[in-house]
Image 1 (cartoon, helix red, strand yellow):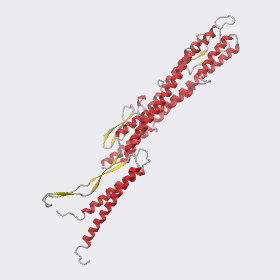
Image 2 (spheres, helix red, strand yellow; image 1 turned 45 degrees about the vertical axis):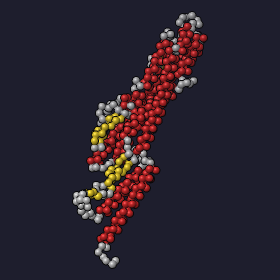
Image 3 (tube, one colour; image 1 turned 180 degrees about the vertical axis):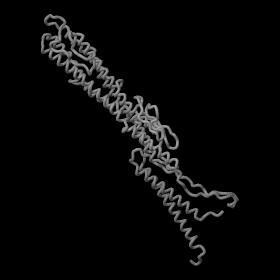
Image 4 (tube, helix red, strand yellow; image 1 turned 90 degrees about the vertical axis):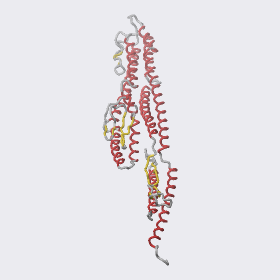
Length: 436
């Protein structure tokens, strides 16, 4: 069976086109070496469909297949799914721990302990003022100093509670901003839904939408720092995204379901903000302990005074209602009676001081633990990303090596094409002409 003289020409053209596609892909990789989330792309080359020669055409009487060169089989992303899962899990832990560490560090700064002007020092001065009154039970100046110290202590307790409440308020406001209509969750979900549609259309047409897939992965990485994330392949290039402990998928194909109710079990930055803003979270626990201290201070003092010394039983409501006229150093009417002042002075190492010492200890331990977890999770996230980049990242050395390899292939195909062209020129223009 005769074979077309143009067969070799077509084979060379396929080689040129394949090597050109490989060079273009390499150039695309180099151009995006600093693009966030870009995945290195590779060209898979394979032998073209051979030309089948029917049986009986060869000398042995059998058939044969004649190679037709090379074809581009696919443009693939060098992406490892397991690496993405590891990174996003660590990213979620890092987002949660770093948010908690920042807030708890602020709470510790508000307490400002140890300090000469902190609540601990003011508590000591308050009980010392009772000792001074016990030493001078008839002194109006000692009573005035005691009332002044009590007011300073009550004010400091109220200011610390107000500062802690502000941290809770900021956390709640930030959470509302993050999950609101213009927040990052809504924005990412909307874009993922649109990308799902575009990717599905491209896949249906037999195309490889690698750059669209990269953009979708970047958005998934961003969401993973906000909360726990999982994806399900819906087929055809589309995915479903489950976010936190929301009842319905955040994104399913092109459908976006947001806002939804989520809890602190969501993890990530949003889970931390929910916990920080709630009454049962770490800041809420600090305020509860501070309330217990204020209640202990007011109760223990009022119990040993004929008239109320403090009003209020929480840190926010604690205030001094005593005056120099209502403060009593002793329980009797005898001159120099000081038994009440002595009993109150003896409480300097009692339940009130102990409650505040425990609070300060809890604040320090909580801030240190949160910072440790933030540092650890950030290190693990960085290591997971480095492992992922070792597979999907662009190496300029590797790309330049590939560029030289494909360039040599292109040059060789060009040489083969020129040779075939010369052969056809002789066949067409010179065959049958004698004497030339």
